[in-house]
Amino acid sequence: MKRSTKYLGIPRDAWIRGITMVILLGIWEGASRLGLVSQLMLPAPSKLAATLGNLATNGFPQGIIVFTHMRVTIFRILQGYLIGAFVAIPLGLMVGQIALLERAVNPIVTFARSIATISLLPLAIAWFGVGELSKVLLITYAAFWAVLTNTIQGVRSLDPVYVSVGRMYGARGVKLFFRVILPATLPRIFAGMKIALGLCFMVIIGVEMVGTVQGLGALIQQSRWFYRTDIAIAGTVLIGLFGLAMSLLLDFLERLLLPWAVGLEEVER
Amino acid sequence: MSNSKARLHLVASWAGFLVIILVWQGISTLGLVAPETFPGPVRVAESVVESLSVGRVLEHVGTSLFRVFSGFGIGLFAAVILGVMCGWYIDFGTILRTPIELLRPVPPLAWIPLAIMWLGVGESSKLFVIFLGAFFPIFTNTYKGMMTIEPNVIRAGQMVGLRGWRLLLKVVVPMTLPDIATGMRLGWSYSFGAMVAAEIIAANSGLGYMIMHGRELGLVGVIMFGIILIGTLNMLTDYVIQSLILKRFLRWHYVPEQK
Image 1 (tube, one colour):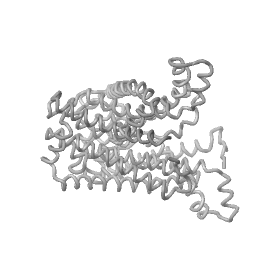
Image 2 (cartoon, rainbow over the protein chains, first blue to last red):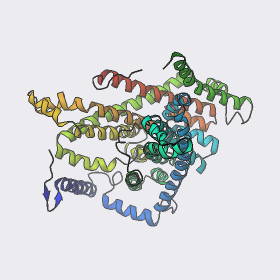
Image 3 (cartoon, rainbow over the protein chains, first blue to last red):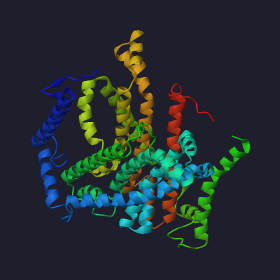
Image 4 (cartoon, helix red, strand yellow):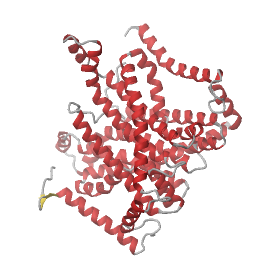
């Protein structure tokens, strides 16, 4: 079934993908110019390119350029994400080692993860207002539980042989923890952090749609009030690219930092 | 595991919840925080009884569940059919996956503004966002399942004389079911989140609306009740879907868990 045929040194699949893209963009551009679809509803790609340029120079709304939106979104994610992970990792490492504690915490974790983070938005606004604090705390919430579950699971699923071998070589206490338990748990922690970052990214887009004009979520939500589909589409495309870049970066980091981690694709989310 | 130890673990699994509820009630009984901002469990129950009727709550629950099940159902249907087709007809798959892979990294919530502009503020824009939440993970997992089938299984099917559509339906699709199930679980949580978000951002019914409206009226008790209700519903539906899949459709695939 392997089709490794090449034309002009480019694999067949790449040709098909490239041609598909060109045809799709061509149909879109043509349909829009000929008026088959409303310019208002689905502006042509050429119009969107101009919109993107405009977003980068003049900005929307009120002169907030697109790079500001990106910076604000990244900064919000990073703050909440790092706080969440830094609290969850030590807690998870502790809980995972005490079976009874793990039992007590498990139902709480399951329930807390079932609460869609976005549903906490009204409560966060009622408690902390519509400012930065609520946004960062919601991100923290999303990151915290995902990292916590995976850290606990990582410790729980640790092969007891590792610990025995470590003990045999005379490692105990702190040394056993840092030389054996932590390195063996790290791949799973990293998997949790990866899942958490994806979650945070989803949550922030929703959170930014309420009560702010800065951030990528705010950009597309604001465009709705002015019925600027071009801005909404351009913004959505940017969000997609942003998400893609983030997951590529994480894959790269994982291979760089944790070369001993294999077969973690099957980790339950 | 000894009997007394098992009992201890059972107690522990309820103790966690109990401690949280007691601390929650304790904070409000001691008056550490103003009850308007942080009502205790008793106060939450009171304010729910005061401002909501059972009928209203059930109406919101019904609306939300109807939305999420319809959107998810359409997403599941489309994703499985397209995923199977993309895996069966390789070139068709390469073509169709080009736009799908480009749209996949966009989180479902980011579609809300566009959905509203394209489809209006009515039901269809919400269904569209919920649909997208389910579609991408189920499609990706279905396709992955199709591409990772053990070739010998297909050869075995061919040996007993199956080919074409019959080979697809009798051998290939059943082999893909475990991956479809994985996608369904992920898709359900995305669909559910998309439903809540769409209702918070633009709706006048459903649980998301109920808590957002609670905020406008300053009723923190109603918000808290709504959040717990949303969490419980999500957990229950996830459990039902999972046990339905595992115990009925995939019984042949999973070894029963040993307790």
